[in-house]
Length: 115
Image (cartoon, rainbow, N blue to C red; front, top):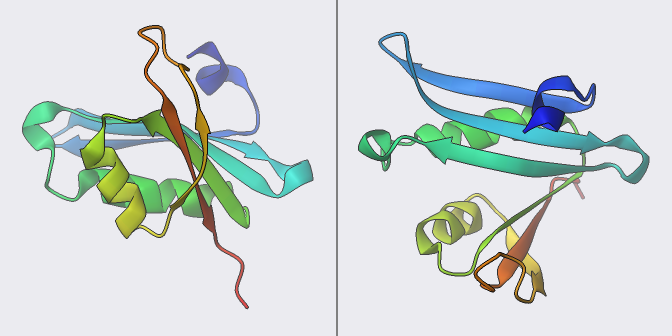
């Protein structure tokens, strides 16, 4: 979390409803590889399924300004998987037993290059 606040190549956005922060996203720009990573995305449970995560993701992608964007998520997080898939991400890797509870991580990538 410290990196999200101090690293110069990170982008940070929040979503507000009635001046209350209800979601946030952090992205990490890796210019040498023309790649960005979505480090974290969260929306308060009561505000989910209202398009907030989708808008945060789109804003972060634009802010990163890279041709490729990657992210990882828990294998069991089907809601997030569906969100990313609908946004144009595809599974490119799996990190076996990545999380403390030994759950796998799915790595997804979106290629934003125009043909």
